[in-house]
Figure 1 (cartoon, rainbow, N blue to C red):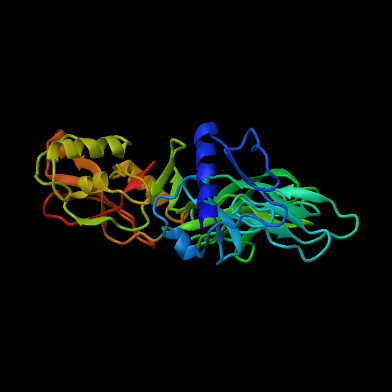
Figure 2: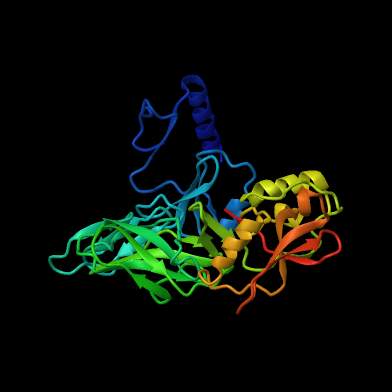
Length: 381
């Protein structure tokens, strides 16, 4: 006991005087870079042995604190913010996986380690979008976000486009668009093929239902497989090209059945082709309420808020195109955004309407603004 006390006293005194100390044999001064040197030719330094739970219960561990974790059989050190495992040659939270076959490749995919099986004799190793792959890559393809229609396909079809920007190392044997009412469509869903090779392409999507949300992706295939472009979505609405070569979109269902305005006031809207201007004038005059022009002005549908009550001339054009967009309009009078003036341009309490019959006898009429209940079909362009 006395011997240990003497050794401890000498060690303390030496450290206090010189700021360094060495314990063990061979004796001599400590290394100049060490504050404390432990010397032995037969024994090692044994750090505290703790389970993971005991380690985690240490309050305020200092950066650099070390223990031996008996739960994982690894030395641990605290880096100032977290405990790090020192297992084998890894400084990750878990040890690197072991290989099973010669030629396997371990690579980091940005989230975790991935083990690539060995390739065959003569195969080349490629990087496809950051992923190591034996052989060629599938093509690079993108989907255009714009879907258009013309007078000939404005009903149940739309034209979409895509681009194959890179063949991926082998010829592109198929390309086109796939679409469905569920996200991430594949070639197992509805498909429109559009040739081969790289570059821009277009495809006509058919059999669409008005007012239904569709998801679309371009695809391209080569010897390495099939790849898909970004997903876009759209909702086809009935539409046509008007006399001014503008695309007019029609809401797929009636929006309202009721009065034309709040009062019998004559506003002075008797002619003109622009229902949007008419709608704004009616709302400015009549204010709040539930009436034809206000319903369209307030409408937000399918991502659009610029709906309006069509003018009488726009109703006539719509009627002429009803078979083009393959849509049934109900029988009965539809309100236009035009008023009716009697003989000599005298103000009246009537507004112009038009009927859309399925077989014959489409006709216009004039109805009382507040007492007649007319149909409303909003449009936009």
